[in-house]
Image (cartoon, rainbow, N blue to C red; front, side):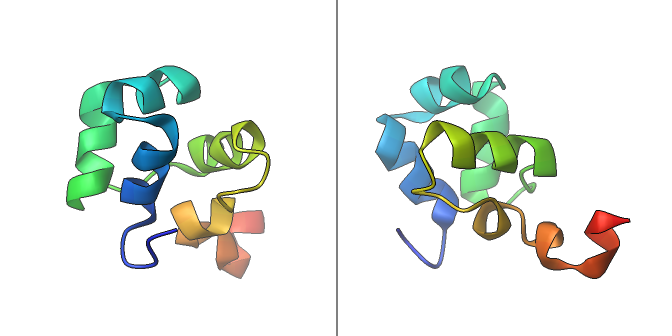
Length: 73
């Protein structure tokens, strides 16, 4: 995984932005925003990405907010 941009690695895993969006049930423009650093992945999508990649991508790496104690409140 690319530690500097896990979203690029996620896109590589699925093949392209369109396939990533389809696998996660989101929009391709949303994927583009993650890759470009314009927005962050939601916790729900990060958890789904972890599930559909069988743990190859950890939700906390895709959505660092999950690591904060406030995320569990």
